[in-house]
Structures are given as C-alpha cells and as structure tokens.
Length: 125
Image (cartoon, rainbow, N blue to C red):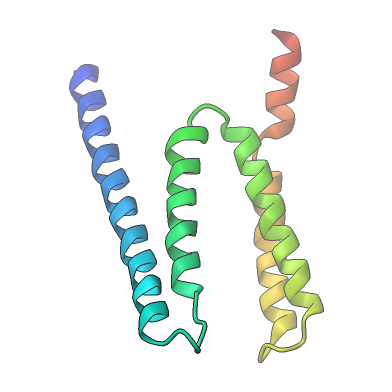
C-alpha cells in the first residue's frame, strides 16, 4: 500500500514541477514580449516573476526535501528583512502595516523552522 502512495506522491510532484515550470515560463515570456514591444517602458517585473518562480520551484523541489530546517530558516529571514525594508520605505499607501505583516510572518517562519532542533539532533549524531 505504501508503494502505491509513494508512486502517487511522485506523480503529483511531477505534475507540480511541470506546472511551476510552465508558470515561470509564461511570466518570463510575457516579460520578454513586453520588452520587445515597448523597450522604452522598461517593465521587467514579469521577467523577475518568471525567474523567481523557477528559483522557488528549484528550492522547494530540490533543496527543501533534504534541508527543511535550514531552508525554512533562510526563507523566514528573507521575509523578515523584506518586512523591515517595507517599514523603512514610505512610498506605499500604508507601508507600516504591510511591513509589519511581512515582518511578523517572517518571524513566525523563522521560529517554526525547527533549526534549533535540527542543530541539537545533528550534534547528537
């Protein structure tokens, strides 16, 4: 029974990998298209979304299964610092609230990453 479940999980991961790759390609190609159509406008946010989607897929499907605690800790720190940058920047409609929400979610991810338990168990081995 567990072999069937594992096979289903592998097939589901394969579908997710394909979906993430295609989603990243759609964003990236949309950015390239917009760059060719209107080069003076200089909108490259779609290209960033495409590349970011690919990087997130690589991190989640390749690195995360092996090093869950470390990856969760690093992602939490990135979110935490993004919140700090938003708090300090005043060009958004309500940057303090947005920064506070992102900072808080970063703290929650860092605290729930399990890095300290991972380090304790690693030292015991």
